[in-house]
Image 1 (cartoon, one colour):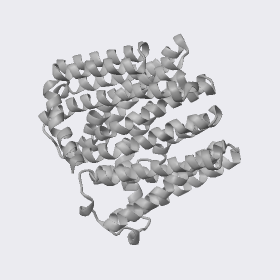
Image 2: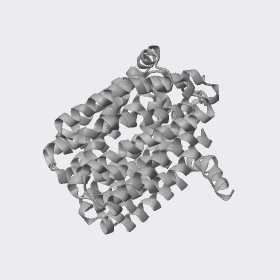
Image 3: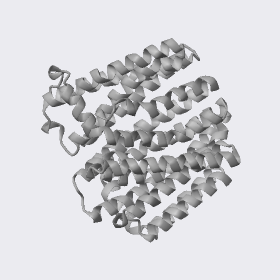
Image 4: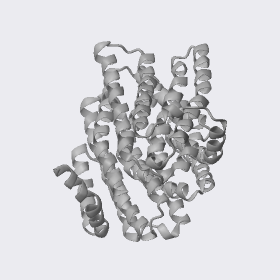
Length: 461
């Protein structure tokens, strides 16, 4: 598990640079209208792509969890992948036809976007389930690099602000990456010669993964409910500002993925309770370090993207929410999945979605600002973490961890709102170092010995 974490962390350094470049270049050189359209398309893909699979991908994820690629049958993997492609193709065609009939440029591309996104998701979950984090990380970086190059060509070579072109490049890149991943996997185990559609593959995977898919769909809808509120109740400018803050949050999520991605395979191997609690405390330190990225993000916005300065307060709320969410998804959600308690996960997600809708509505009613929507997102994640802690008494944080988290989040929000980027970052990092030296000393030593030391050795080599 530690080796897998290091693979993802190292690869994500490059990935974060690519994400940052894309996230800053697009709003800088495109109009508010075009950027808003790009983010609207992304919102549809993020929210609805999962439910289009009916649980097929999640069923495959459960089937291969904890296994190695070399242990799998080439025939089974080949027929599973091809059956999924055939299953998704009519959906993609139908959505595309509907898009052309509606003459909406976003919907015109949506069908191809659903197909390419779900095929990439198939490979990502396949590699996650089998613990092959190196291949997963390569795919992550390849897709982002090609997407960045495509956007740069549109901006600096073609010099266009055509929203359709910026939206269409995503599905095109997705299909290129899918073909590449198919060729790479075929070199390891011969799958292409076993491409065949099998009805039982579809029915079996849907049956195994349907409940888990519903949970994932509710999770995706839960994570995007704030943007739906902004889109429905506020202006295009507000949606663009909020979406920009979300794109910055996704940069944080890039580094949170070592926690959320690798843990399923880890829990499938049934680690001891003591080891899980150590890993959970380590994940807390890691999350609190990563969310400090909000300070340099704010600094860049202030000097590079002044038209998006209204998004900085939103960023701090969303980054803090992402830090909390990393603990929830990395530890508790992966534990539920590994234990096969998908229904518990689904019911929990539905409850959190209801709470999110209520809080977003209440917060918006009293302030009618995008910052209030972001504050509702953070509050919802805190409530979710508290519920998970209550439901799993054996895994609860110790009082030192709770106190450290409370202090850090408080300092984080205050410095983000009241201090400039540099001073705020210095204060937050100083408090964090002090807490690691006192309240979380044992966990810090564990993190250093388990992850930092091996990483430094790899760098020296």
